[in-house]
Image 1 (cartoon, rainbow, N blue to C red):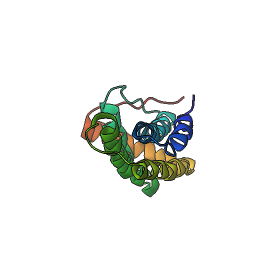
Image 2: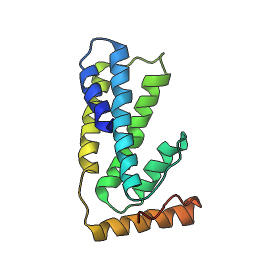
Image 3: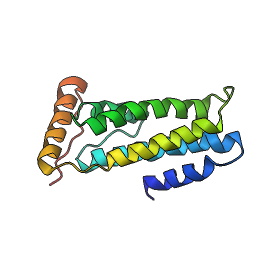
Image 4: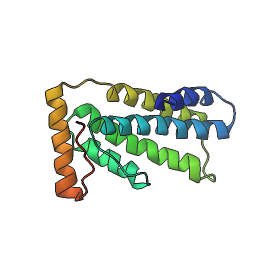
Length: 147
């Protein structure tokens, strides 16, 4: 399964007629972006925890890359997560179709940003920046050589 499969489902659900469909669209859109970003970090050699801390850890790492597109992804992903939390956990708050449509649209933008190619030299700089952040700030090293 691909994270983009979640996006396909979110696109269908956002056009539904029920609040349950809209809430699920928001959730699936978020997870499409989350898993795509997580895979990018995996491709660079980082192994994030499989806990709720993975969400915050992912955005924190993207923030320090020095790549404007990835930093935007980090900001927007945090906002999408907040919307997803409302959709999944705060059933007393109304959730409208417009919020689902906005979440799906934002996710589409994020998937495009995550697909931006960086040169191998730039990728090495990004990896080093994230490694330094893990070592010096998080005091948690998850990077493993890809060789």
